[in-house]
Every structure is written in C-alpha cells, then in structure tokens.
Length: 319
Image 1 (tube, one colour):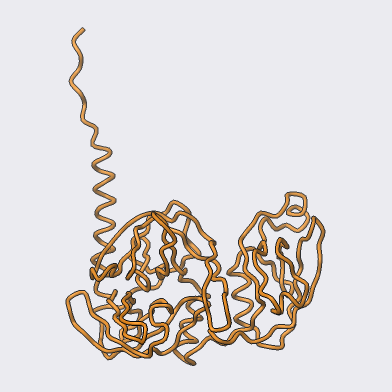
Image 2 (cartoon, helix red, strand yellow):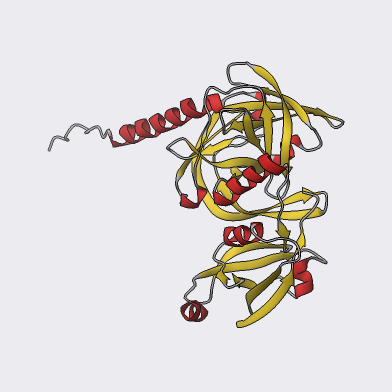
C-alpha cells in the first residue's frame, strides 16, 4: 500500500505566531516607558532600569538600584538623557520613586499581580548589561516567594514576590514585568540563579507604597518582624476554620515585636486582629494601616493547636 503524503500541521506555527505577536505588542507598548538608569557613588558606577508610571516625570525602580545616591541620569530607548532625583525609597519592598523633568512618550499602565496565575505568559522589558530596551519572555513560575533584603536596620524579608523564568540579567532591576495586555504587574528586582528571576508584584499594597513615597518620601508602617510563606492549613483545621491557607513563619527577627510576643519559626498565622490571613499580602495590607504602638492580636497554629498572642508593634525604621 502506498504511503500517504505527509500532512503539514500548521498548529505549531500558528501558536508560535500568536505568541510572537503578543510579545511584540507588549514590547512596542512598553519600551517608550522603560528607561535606563545610571548612578554614580563612592562604590563606582551602577546601572538599572526604571518605569515611567505618570506623564509628569515620576518613575518607579528598585530601591537597590539607587541605594546610597540622591540622583543620576536616565536615558530613554531613543537616547534622550535627563537627570533625576530620588523622591523616596523603601528597602523593605525594594521600590523607589524617582522624579525627572523628562516627559515620557507614554506612561505605563500598572496592572494587578493578584490576578496572575502560575504558568501565565509574562514579558520583561529592561536594560540588562547596558543593552537598552531589551525584551525577554517567559512564564510565571511561582507566586508568593520571599527574598532577603538588606536594610539599615539589618536583614529583612520581602514577601509575596513573583518568580519567573523570563531571562533577567544585571541592569534588569527596576524594569517592567508585564502581562499580555502590556500592564506592568511587577518590578524586576533580582536574579536568583540561572533561569530564575524575581519581581516585586504591582498590586493594591505596592500602589499604596508608591503613593507614600511620592507624598512623604518614605513609607510609614508598623513592624511585626517576621518572614513568611503561604502554606496549606491541615484539612481538619481548614474545615473548622473555613480557611485553606495561612502563613508559615520562616523567620523571626530577634528582639522584634513578633519575637517579644512569642511567635516562633514554624507557627502558622491564620488571622490578625480578627481578619483572616491567607497570604503575605493580607498581612502587609493590615500592617500598612497600623501605626507604632498598636496592638496586633494574632492567632496561630502551633503543633496542631490554636494559639493566640498579642504583639505590640513598633515603627519600622531604616528602610
């Protein structure tokens, strides 16, 4: 029997074409809003990226990009140069706001990282290794990660970070991580290893942080002093509490309010001041609305039992 001619399957080509069109659209939309940052300090010259998020010259970048400097220069993708000044920085979220007289061709639309799903396509736009307007694409590899951050008060933990396999290199920090609708859902903050990038999410909490930085030059927040990761609540307790997740405590800062309240590594936070805590962002939102001296009632799971503690919050300084 004669063999039938091989039937060409265009499905792969069509899928690749749709993927390419999406990435091209995001790149074309965001490149005018993503600038290259050059800073000079006693440690030498450094570089990073920044995203214009207003039409009157405000940029968001990573706090570590502008660490130890009050100003520098930014460059647009088409070569325009303008000096900037640091309006405010917050090491705990690794976010900073810059101001420049440069009027960008367009302001990036800020999205909502809370809507992201693992496996979703994302596009990174930045200036790695001095290569302006570089674009890479990948997927959301994981959500709710935590990374360490160095502050004047010592090491802290940045919670609720996005993990992506979009290629990131030195200079990408401060650049945009965008969804397929060209909305900035994250600010790239670090390269954790080969094939592993991290970004601070853009959501209601970080929008509040940007607003505080623009208005006050710093973020006024109460401090609890723990690092955490989202974890599933044991099934029996989940049914009883009608709550499937909580925050497993992975770090307690010595002599912090959490430490003095008796919170331990391994505890699982399930509520604070009567509000369910499902993710790190739930706790962050609560802390941003509290002030130093406030009392925070925390319910924990410890060794399978519910434990209540009260923490007297202090103001987080040195960030």
